[in-house]
Image (cartoon, rainbow, N blue to C red; front, side):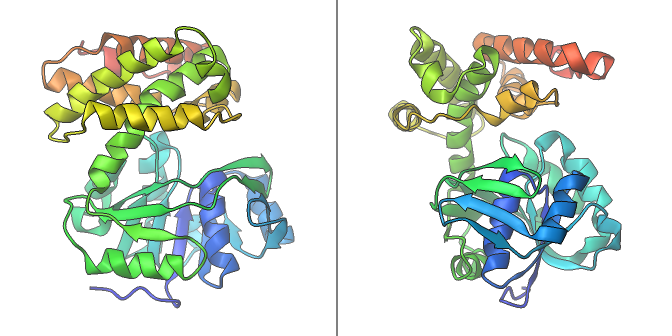
Length: 324
């Protein structure tokens, strides 16, 4: 097993809000981090002025390296996969020269199927699952706002106890990113998915913040239907989540009264491809495999993709409906 310590090099694939936040925290505490992103203005601002981090933790400029050309980078020991789910394959293949035989990949992405895709490309043994309660948003090029200082979880996808996971969590916790080892990371990823099945498309289709969505009459009825379908698919996949637990998770999200719009909503507003295929679309696809029906999630996928089609045009992917 490779050793992960203060001399380990870290690459962040996808320096959006969360990728920049994680990379910035670790670099601020002294680790060797490079942020990889295609947004050239963001990369240039970080390299010339430092990454500006505001909000929780204070207002400061963090010195961290950024690049839009991973082919020029040297090998790293740890990779945070934090790009949009639809761009995972492209991001991994474009940065292959950065990976060695012992490089470990931790996906902190939204939705389902990300870890499996990275495993197909880089090998099952090199991939870990990740989940975070942290929150951040992009304020502008080279500028992010942190909303929380909460726990991040990392675990083996098969749920086994793992020395490397404990080593990584210790390293990150000692360098500004509070992390805990999890033996239930697959379940935790599903739990996050369940509330995203509701909040992501509902915010997107209404162009409302989470607080505004759930102050709207009827919103909880729709949310409960989406989560109920997700629970049935999770059970068919061998992930048993009590309905009371799912209800509690959704209640916590609603009670937070967050003023932000979801990342799916922001993607559509900025005329980008969203992650609906990896959230509601993934549940629809898995349901088909198990002979289950998910009509409300199907509707969400259709409406979000129809909005995207207004600017994606013929590039829009309707594959999720081709086998229904």
